[in-house]
Image 1 (cartoon, rainbow, N blue to C red):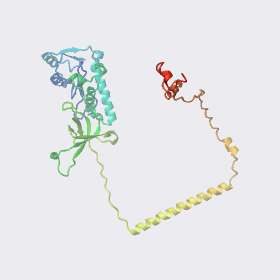
Image 2: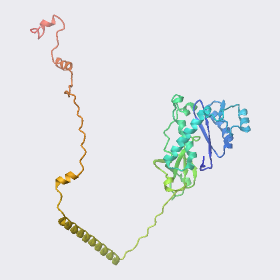
Image 3: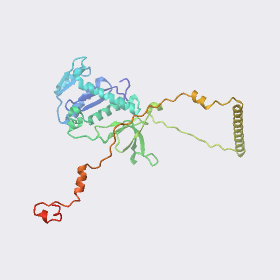
Image 4: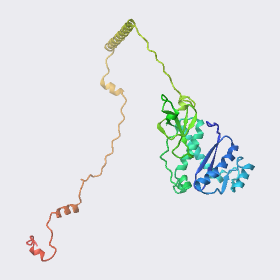
Length: 348
């Protein structure tokens, strides 16, 4: 990266599991730190997933081709698969994931209006979000679900760069001190649990991992427009009352009265001159001339009317009307003996 993070990192390295799609990411100060980052990854991955790492696929960069790195892989029993040079398609999973992370991080920085020095927190947040979301290539299951067998919750996700208020316990403050401190939401602490937020105190430039926090997602820090760096900007306004003497007050009122009278006289003079000009001027043009000189209005197109015949609304079909009328009729006889003995025997 052309800009270092707040802690001085310039690179990041990703480890992607091909089976689940889970991404592990680490920020690096130098490319030579890739060896140190990989040494701690297998133990954490095998402990959380319960499975052994079989092979490592890389693009053959200098950070993966050192003798120390090869000896470590041989000692751990991990096979090293190197893609051909200038052929990133052989390592397409890692290349596409790096592009996804960078595009998401770019959007987070642009939306939050934070500086480029926050790119480290942005890529960590992008990786955390990607691990929580389901994927069509993995049967609509999230990488964390594949990795641990548990469906992750996304209720803790908040807007990146929002203003957060962290509660200060009574052991860390005095009686007149504030009970909260204003911070910036810069991500989530995955190792400590999904409910622990990663907050940055702009005044002390320290990272805070609190549990008691209130996040205002509608308010964010706009460092670009304010021109401030990572420091809290405060504006102090001083005001001193000015005593006015009674004589000065009378003089001010007189001056205001004279100015108002002068304005009224000017308005009256202008109105009189304008009226004289109208009387001494030429005759007013006729109404026909004004209509002829005015531009012709554009004719509005005639609205198209529907030509289909409108039929009255029928709430019931004829059969329904017959059913309603037949409901009031007397029941018909069910056999030959009932017909002559009933009340309708004369009709039968």
